[in-house]
Length: 253
Image (cartoon, rainbow, N blue to C red; front, top):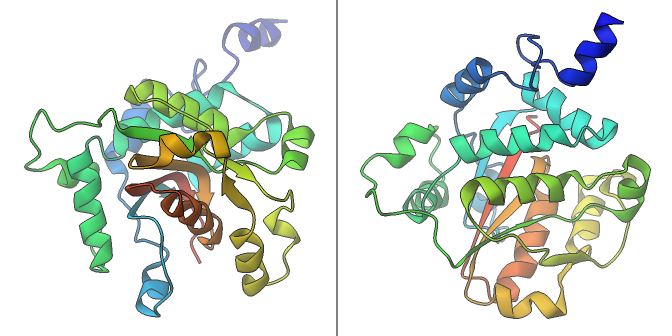
């Protein structure tokens, strides 16, 4: 009886320390944010091989392990929608907070630097009035309809909407799916690349919003990078000035 009452009053316990109340208690959230380091761009090697990369910079919070990974899984597969708000709060606290920081990260990644950047190092020297601007739009990689129906939630959409609220930016569904094939149906990397390349398009009604804008493209995880790159390509070809990618997790090989 007591466990049921506590579960109703505090539906989550901290995924890091187990304390009842939130998916991440304030102390654990602060610890996680302070310990985050920007992971190397997963397309660094493909850049060197001459493969076109259509996003300008990518910020990934953590490798696929630990509390954040467990939270992402529960949003996606257990439809725990409230956790998307908490994950978005982590992204908003740790990711670049100004155009200057995003551009600095883009410059680092374009030079294939191996060093890691923390949220603190990205903001060094930034002007106090240099912030995220009105011409930035938050969008997301649309989830396959079969997954949305099966899981009861579009996790990327939830994550993007909450991140936009925390950041004070508008959010719009700029991308639609051309087909509903999930990448897990692809047998190898080349097939995954071809499948991702034809998966997305900019919605006709959204093209005026894309042209000339700076886009923050959100997904929960980056694995091979094909999905994110294919989505970014559509945004750039529709006239986006810059595309910055933001994910919670990265699948490390």
